[in-house]
Length: 350
Image (cartoon, rainbow, N blue to C red; front, side):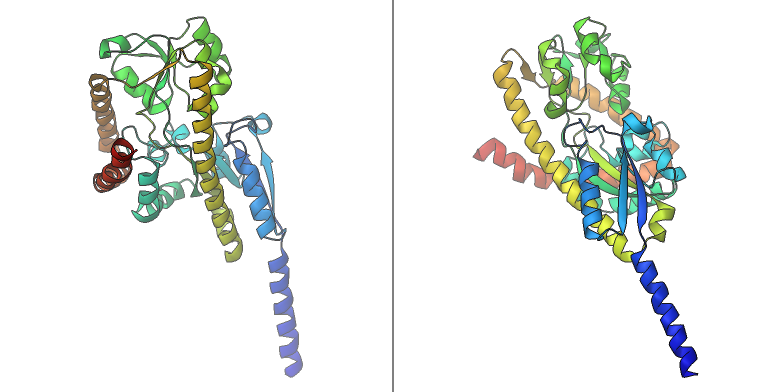
């Protein structure tokens, strides 16, 4: 009997040891090429962290758009298991599931700090897990690029009438909102944006923020750079295939989750730094560029159009409404603190 017990224990120990030493080779697809400031580096940092912390039990192979040729199909590729992990942003998939864009940003919505507080402590994470679970995905925040700019314009925009008929390249929900107030929305390929501006094919373009915009040279041909309203927070996400996630040992799940937190924090800080120094460069090297804000009249019109579109989407989808209501409820509370803390400090004390 003792011999049987000893053999059983030996087999169990061997199986446990084998499981502990199993190597997981994970395929990783990203929306961003390596040359995209900050975001292009995020997958590489994730890979370095998980491989080091797992002592080689996790190996990550990263495929960039130049390899997988599907920059805005990360959702489907991770959902199907073609890739184990993805790095992208939910608002790229509005056409498949409008709810996903709410986890990236909402026009006139929360800023980065407010959104992170809502996500981590106000029920956002639980809502994200539920919604993405239907897509066979476990999501993790992957780094917020912060406030995005309102776009580069070739002429000053003073009134709502100035927006009517303007040829504007602005994607996603921001484009729908601008169309609602009269803009003519264009879908110009990314690589043709500068030429389109220079040749007057378009009158304005909205892309990201100084750190990324500077690479396109917009400041050379469009001299009015407007502050943002459409993307007050721009959260990127890691998508993990749900079936894979559930198959991983708990310690490796913990390593992956904590790696996403480290990378997300680094992305936010690096983006803030790069946007700061790049804006300073633009103001010094291109003094003819005017940084302006849209008038209250324009912002009110954009806000009205935003609310109409969001309310329409809420009426069609109860889960969309659940997420949006949760965000709006928290923002009513958090905005008071934002106003008397950061806003008051900048306006009064500095």
